[in-house]
Amino acid sequence: MLIGCVGKANVGKSTFFKAATLAEVEIANYPFTTIKPNHGTGFVKVDCVDREFKVKCNPRFGYCLNGKRFVPVELMDVAGLVPDAHKGVGLGNQFLDDLNQADILIHIIDVSGSTNEKGESVQALSYDPANDIKFLEHELDMWYLRLIEKGWEKFARAVNQEKPELHKAVAKQLSSLRVSEELMNEVIKRLGLGSDITNWDKNTLLKIAIELRKETKPMIIACNKIDVPGAEKNFDKLKKEFNDYILVPCSAESELALREAAKHGLIDYIPGENDFKIKNEQLNEKQKNALDFIKNSIFKKYETTGVQEVIDKAVFDLLKYIAIFPGGINKLQDQHGNVLPDCFLMPENSTALDFAFKLHTDIGNNFVKAIDVRNKKPVGKDYLLKNRDVIEIATSK
Ligand SMILES: Nc1nc2c(ncn2[C@@H]2O[C@H](COP(=O)(O)OP(=O)(O)O)[C@@H](O)[C@H]2O)c(=O)[nH]1
Ligand SMILES: [Mg+2]
Image (cartoon, rainbow, N blue to C red):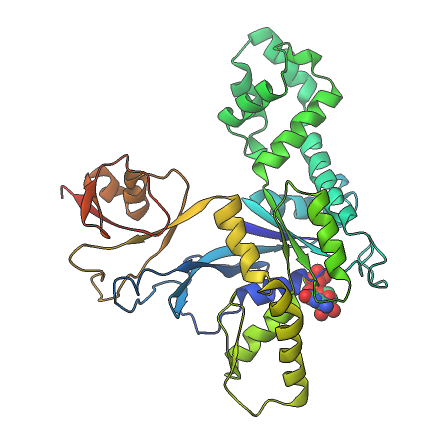
C-alpha cells in the first residue's frame, strides 16, 4: 500500500511528511526499501494485542510504545501540484506518474487560508481553502479525461466492429489508470451508458473520468495549520461543504515539534496521543512556550495534532484495512524468540486463506485450518478476518 501526500506549495506537505516519518525510537528494519528521495516510512497505530496476552512484543518492523503498535506504511511526498499540471505545466507528468502509483491520497490543505492559489503566503483567512479541494479534484479529473481520450476514437470504432464485452474492453483500454473490469462494469451501469460506444460524447467521457477518479484515488483531507487563530471557522465551513470527505484538523508543525522533543528525550510522547509528559526540566523558555501552546491550542480543542489520525483514518476508515497478528496457540514467538513479531495490514473481507497466502505461498497451498488464537477455536479457510485477530495457520506440511 502506498499513500501519496499531495497539496500545493507551502501548505506544509514537507512538515507533515517529516513529522509522519519521524520515529522516536531507532528502527533497524524497514519492510520496504525506499530508494526514491520522496518516499518514506510512516506508521499506522494499532492497539497491540500484547497486553491482552500478557506478553511484551518484539516487532520485526515498526515499533510498539505502551501497547500502541506502530505498523509501517509507505508514504510518498508528491510535489508539483500546480494549475494545469494535467497539461504538463510544472513537473506535470512526473507529478501525475507519482500520483498514479498511490493507492490513496492525503490531500494537505492550509485551512488557515494563509496560502493563496499560487502557494504564496498571504494574510490568514484571506484565501478560501475550499478552492484547493475543488482544484485538485479538477486537476485529477482532467488528467483522467486526457488519458481516456487518448486514442479513444480509434478504440471506439474497433469496439463497434468487433463487439467485445464492453466493460472488459474499456477496462483494458484504461489499464494505465488501474481500472478493473468489475469497476468499469459498475461505472457503465451507474452512468446508464448505452452499448454503442461511438455515441459516448466528451461529456460522457468526463463523467467516466470523474467516477473512475473517485474510485481509484480515494482521498482524505488533512486541514493543516489549524493552530492559526481563526482557522477553526474555515474548518467548520469545509466540513459542511465537503461532507463526502473525511476532513481532519491538523497541525503538522506541532506534531513535528512533539516528535523531535521526544526523540531528544525532553518529553514522553506517543504519536497521536492527546498528551505528553515533560521528562527534562531543562527546557528553555521557547520550548516551554511551544509545548504550552500545543497543550492549550491543539490538545484542548482537537484532542490530537491530527497527523497520526489522518494516516490511521486513511488506512482503516477510508481504505477499510484491518490489522492481523500471526501467532500460535502454544507460543506467540517466531523461531528467533520474537514475541508477536508481525502485524499485517489486509483489505476488508480478507479470509483466513488470504492471510495464509500473505504469510507465504507454501502456507497458502498447504492450508488445513486456521485457529483463532484468542478463543483457541478452529476456523475454516473462508473465515472473514476481523481487525486485531490473532491467527495461527495449520498446514499439511
Ligand atoms: N502554523 C503552522 N505552520 C505550518 C504548519 N505546517 C507547516 N507550516 C509552515 O508552512 C510553511 C511551509 O511548510 P512546508 O512543509 O515547507 O510546505 P510545503 O511547501 O507544502 O512542503 C513553513 O513555514 C512551515 O513552517 C502548521 O501545522 N502550522
Ligand atoms: Mg515541500
